[in-house]
Picture 1 (tube, rainbow, N blue to C red):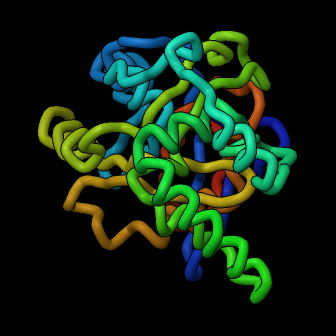
Picture 2: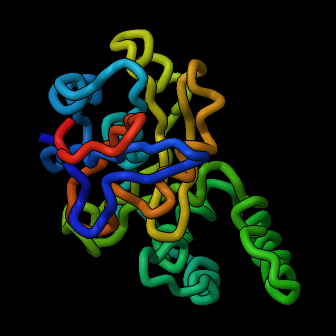
Length: 239
């Protein structure tokens, strides 16, 4: 039985068509788990031709094992300084977290980080947002972890953005004939990291369907959303 998360609508209408967004609950997924086994256990029993599944970038990254532990991050004065200027957000700490800021510095270098910070500060004067992340790139906005806001498991580890996400989606399509997208979604917005080539024209549709973050932001444990088009809305919430 599939259903939406509490407080989230099952259906959403986009461009005159109705879609269900089923939240697939999984066990608590940890470092090094087999993504294929997750799909086989939780997705295949429900998947129908024409469905699209979205996978959280976190579970894909965890399956790849690309993380860094807090104990291995040497925080510098620059990270402490710059993190103070990151806008505080109730939904996520982002680079306000000094460990995430330090990892960003380690990846792109202090010169580029400082340049991006200066340009972003100028941009704020003209109410232009997002300049910082556009300049530093390299998946920095997708850094996760280093916090225990939802689960203690993430307190001591940072999780990098998934490697070769397009290849992951294409492999899922080739092995299971399942259309998929890897997304970084929260209550602030939706970023689609990758999709299999067969649904390359569905990006904007999925972005609209996930706008209200049907996967949730707390302890839902629903990192997979199954999207299904309906000619009309069902009475039942089962899939």
